[in-house]
Length: 123
Image 1 (cartoon, rainbow, N blue to C red):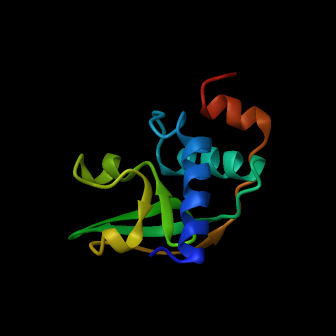
Image 2 (spheres, rainbow, N blue to C red; image 1 turned 30 degrees about the horizontal axis):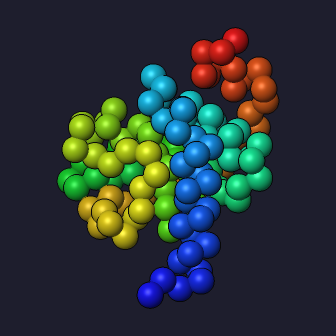
């Protein structure tokens, strides 16, 4: 049986998927993705944090790296750039990938409409 807390997480993740689905395959690196994702999540009032630091996938490390963190999940659309097609992509449930490790600190991106349009090739 699913707990109330798990039900809230699932509902939140469904909303997040809906909000970001059109943008997860843009030709951007991690900083661009983090800016696009924080813009979208902020516009939709979805609580999240942006992090900068390093990421490890199996025995490989990439630094510097940026990602979005929310309730046991990470949004990371650039892992495959650094680690190849076997790396996770999009909304990642961390407990399902014990070989994926993030180490970083919160950062703040102030992304306005103009920057969002440039990054998403709409402007």
